[in-house]
Image (cartoon, rainbow, N blue to C red; front, side, top):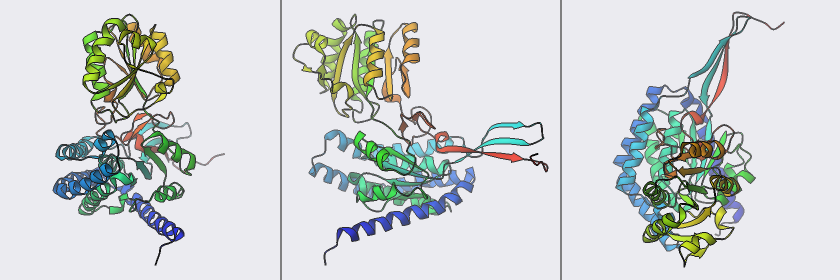
Length: 427
């Protein structure tokens, strides 16, 4: 007997609503858990990830094979692939979260009113966090660990290309919660790869408190446009490195190579290189040779192509494109002002860097570039929760409200006012 579309949709809706409802119940218990209980659960998560490596790697191999069959890019397959080192990094990330202070219950401010009322502003969990993401299965454990430590239940919906990997990781994390005597539904993975599951999630505003998407521009746009739940969004990462006229050329080359090539499929990889016209004649031929040796396709403006003939011409579209691949656009600028203007016009307020020995130029760049992370003499690849000392990250927000940049434990809390009185009434 054939299955109708309406039946499939009904089945998907039922599965998603049931998963999220159980997460809502688990959130109440988790919000009351002590730091010791939560850290015990996290330690168990790292342990179970380690003991179930063979199962996780087998599931990941299925996903990678399917991705290769479907013709996904090598950069996306790199994001999808797990190995022993990446699993070790996932375990290390969880252990780093254990070592972080528990934000829940922290008193942000305390004061007493003339009428004797004592008022405290206290950190509390957000509640149930829905996370929708693509490709990278390590996100599953990173987000789960941060949510558990901050007292939030989490509902995870990874991309269909990583479905088996995410299910295997999620199963290990659930076993850890049970072993630590916390509700297993505190970490939930949507049990279907059907994309309709995302649409169902985004309508459950009575059960999910916030949605955090991690993925490409199309995914983010769809979620923002259709969600009935508040969204903390991560816009695309059109990141820049500006090589100032006062830059150390050797340092600049090293930073440029790292920002573009270390992991090009990440949101904090450089997509556009800006070079001051006084640096360009000596710097560009050298750095482009090294970039091309690393198999980077260069797209240059007219002045760049005059210095290095044979390059592909950059178009207006290139300046706003997040390649997530070994492609780089280059522009020669007349001044620091022009570099800042270019970033303001074409950038995505994610991560931007200046390489310079001039303190005044560095100060002006930091003040005028309005991005979530601004670097002086360092690679944009450092925009990362673990690299910032946050243990891990739930995502990198390019919003301005509530959270901005790498989101760690504190960004997964809100606050409430706790007021102590001695019988006061308002006249």
